[in-house]
Image (cartoon, rainbow, N blue to C red):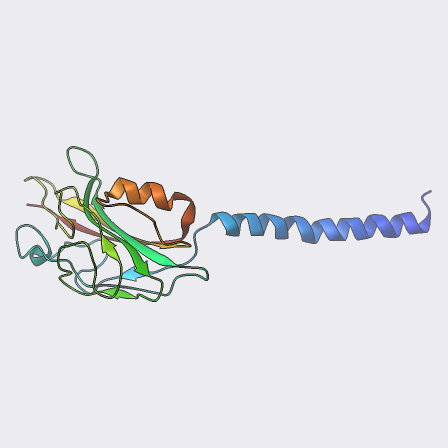
Length: 187
């Protein structure tokens, strides 16, 4: 029969493991999971058709977007808009990076060029232009357009010209949170 103090020690160890293991697993999951971030637009409902004015069949202007505050340690935001249904593979329509952590929106019709009013920069889309290039699929079934916003724990140090792949590679280990809004468009 074990000594009484051995039983007490075993019970303390069991209790500590009962608390410590789930807590440690929870911390690992939390560290690997991007934080909560929400992206939205009043221009179209999530999953619905993107109005023509935001496409190459219309004025080809960017929709207004807004988002919630990033998690603690957010230093910048990145927005990437792409079409995974494009015939040649995923087509990048818009790249915006180094938006300040204080930013909560992009206005409608962000003008083309390197800089974004209020901070941030625009990279080259797959139309080889700095700025927004609206949905412009070939005739046929509608394509999906993913508006993805990332909260990063850094400001990206990139040399121009900046492509979507450059931003993707540079932000890989810096994503704290991600949000997504999807629209469709067909011609």
